[in-house]
Image (tube, rainbow, N blue to C red):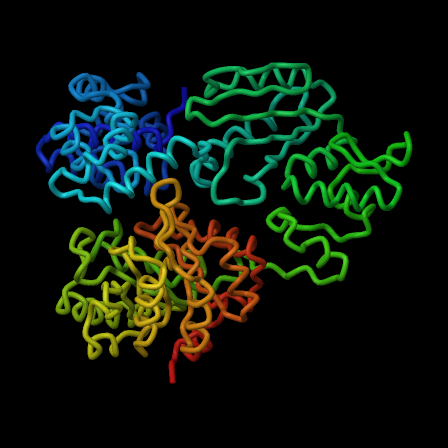
Length: 573
């Protein structure tokens, strides 16, 4: 069965967690974590590389020992060492580690102090007040843990969009090649580019549904067949992702694709509009009485409703039908509109590629400019740059710019916003930068007023150009900090600052609703990848999807401007 880089990385992360719980050598733990990050950042599938006879030990952070373990996972589907370590650590502690705010060290402390081995144990200890009495925890941490346990038990399992994409893309290609299938598309929240996906809805057109279904359930990543019929089937992949396939007659494809793309609220609104025109609309087609109307494509569906085609990213019943009716749909920003990337990291802090390598990758993408935004000095865990290190990097950027054609590397930094709203570098150093991306990385548990005031105080500094990942959320790992986004947007407008749409699929922060708020207020947003490797620059597409869901057009995005216009916008009076 095929093995994805993400599967191997997840195995290494699990092993690192268990080893850390077992108080193993920290250098050994770090080696597995570094290998996992390297695999996720790699642009090539290591299973394919093995098949081609490549030496995996030459990959970053992968020596001979780890290369052998990757080979074992690819060839056998499991890792013996993980199974051995798992026998030494209570199985349920892995679930405890996965909770936001816990981690292996805290899980070990709770296990040693209170005998906690499962989420149920953790919840009872939090409810009984025992966690607050453990050294290093306290009442506030206990409350956050209880909230996290409750959310984790009640939350529907959803996959980040990039994770779903890893499994969806090869599956769609496989389905399109099946006998009996003429064409196929992924519908649902995946097609609407939501930041998480509950399951995959795939719509196919074909004259022999039974053959198509037979081929679908034979896909080598299918772990379990939930249901199987003549024209539809539901399976669970080895990754845990549920996939629903529906095969319809070619003349019903447009209607089925529209129906299963959703959202439910958008579909209901469309059906009401159809009823008002004497039509009946469902997943099989568009009907006037018993007579089927032409509906081979979504365009024909919308034509029958008296509307232009509405992009899937807008189909949330947030005014898109009214805008379409009025001829006022937004001209959405596209990937090709982006002129540069204003957030990325190099090996100077916690990135995987050098300054020159990131610049060359940007040139290959046709960018006019990039901002190198390595971490500031307080981010020691991320290799934050000292004052002297940053000044040396500025000299390196000057030297590099003298050798580049068609690309300008902006002197920049991702500067931590400290708890009191001051910045992590002195003003005389900030004045030397072309751009300051100010971000919160610690103290995310402040109340809404304090957190909002903290960020606004940072914006008061005239050197700040962009607020990075404004809510600090990590999808499926850490909730957004309590921030009054309307106040932040208003403050940014008043001060000539901008907010970021962080395109990393782990963040996608701001979310789509906040993007719309900013647009409606007249605040342009920056879309930055926060890339920590060359491959991370490709995450721009996720930021574009998020911006589109927020109705952003090219004029609503800061980095659609040319370099001179960008410099003008970043200047503050």
